[in-house]
Length: 350
Ligand code: IPM
Ligand code: MG
Image (cartoon, rainbow, N blue to C red; front, side):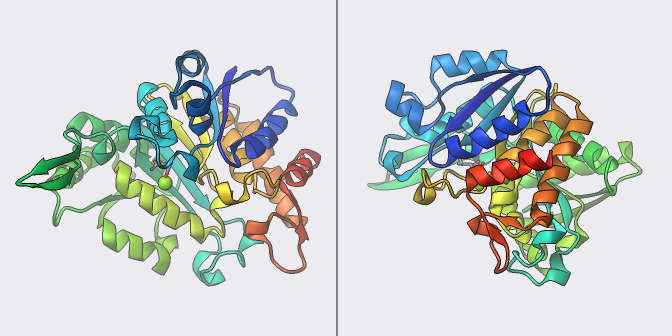
């Protein structure tokens, strides 16, 4: 079980360290090696996804990633931005299926800005296509047309790309509450018409799954109006980026949301949904739970170690029940802890 650990930038190293401690405490035989991705890699090598990291990531069974990016690199040319490294590794490893579960732990019902009755018991899975769409479509760029600058990006999906993500979505729904909502924008975008037609065409193979379709603007509204109507949602790269951030707030904090990005053989990269939080980097106060929960997803999806995955998830639930809170999920009366202490609490609960 080879794991490539990419701490990245900002709070990345702090939160990854806690997830690594949790993995090591399980008593399984992991081989872990660290490498550079993102801004730290740009600083060291000029490349956000350097050769050495590519080799390690390709040879590993799974990648554990903290977060990349920060204001320091926002002024760099696009090829040298940390985000380029992240998109590069997703594309190179073929990690087309991004699973972002939004689960509300009952202990955090008050941390959400939504009314407890709207979010209590929430358990939805957003499946975001991760290697296509406007993120990678050509042509792209900024050029001069008719004497002025124009910015261009291309939204594009092939049938095969849609089919392989839809298959993951139907199969995931089958293992859950058997409801799948596909999100598109067919009233305006042809690309998403192909998306809807292709997903619909597969429904007959999954008669046990109830398939519905929703326009993305409506989906954004329904997610805050009545999120519990959803079980599994599937959508393209850009809509999924936006809807998954929105869904995270239903759970109280984006600091709680893990993610898995999988290829066709369940090799994967596991990372929190949140970013590098440069404003609190190095202060030891970031919430490590999303990264710890991402490690649990690694055990479940790549290593087929469901029991150990559940141990970690139960340990997280326990520390929340014990009242441990980082700043992002703090409520009065709780025990305010930093990153390391939260890691300690999870280890003790394990
Ligand atoms: C995410 C992030 C990334 C994305 C950024 C950092 C490139 O927002 O993983 O959701 O847009 O995919
Ligand atoms: Mg995002």
